[in-house]
Length: 306
Image (cartoon, rainbow, N blue to C red; front, side, top):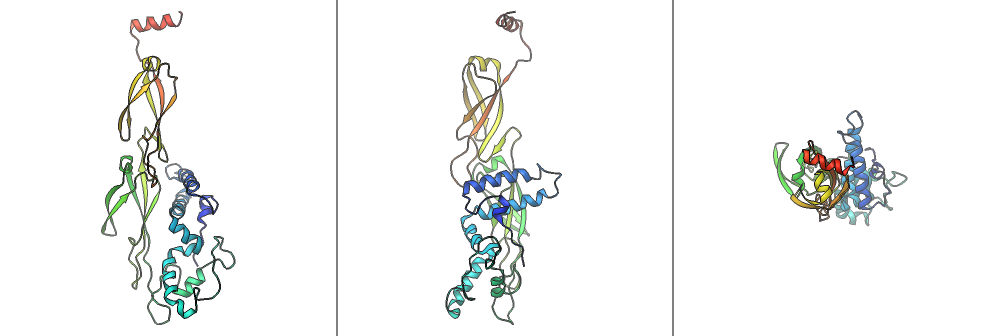
């Protein structure tokens, strides 16, 4: 019997967690267990995959509803419901084995569908049966495939299509705008072919988004430091700043304090599947001149009262 994995426990959230809570928990754990952050932790990669798997299911309302109802057998929900409809009349109602089955997520008494699916389809969890009686060949679902796709930050500024070669065939994949580093996309039916007429497995693509060194990313928001010359910080002026979507002219007020943070609204990355953009935060740092002319040195000496 396949071991039950509690996706809510994996992300450290309650079963009633909303989308915002799920995303916050996912980002925190993805950063914690990212192989680049924890290269010396042999369990980090497995934990990182587990976090991605949990978020991929719970962040999708349709998948989450099936998971909440069927537990570890949620991927067979459609096959079960279709078979239940086809056989419903012969069993005198919805549940062919009588009683009510309600999945609670804890694997407790009466909550596991494993025996239900095994009796319905025959064999172990990977089978999506071709028939219900003996003497007929069973159909087995194909193996899932995991792959990684490395993209640049510029590739996620809008939906971007790329052609990948998987199992010898070419697939046209859409890279969603604003996708997070470590986020996983599931392509149903694009894994290994099934056996005995069974369905193909799925393809799971984990995105590795390479953020330029000058930026720090937090979801759709970006952070970076910018050097500003001393005279502009003291007297005010304009500063040309590069952003992911192009250069902008930033006004700098007189007597701007060193380290002041300025927000450029909407100049961050696209918000994943929610519209709009995040913000770009700039830390303004004074860049002192390397050499002073005699006149400049005289001026600063006079200002210092020496």
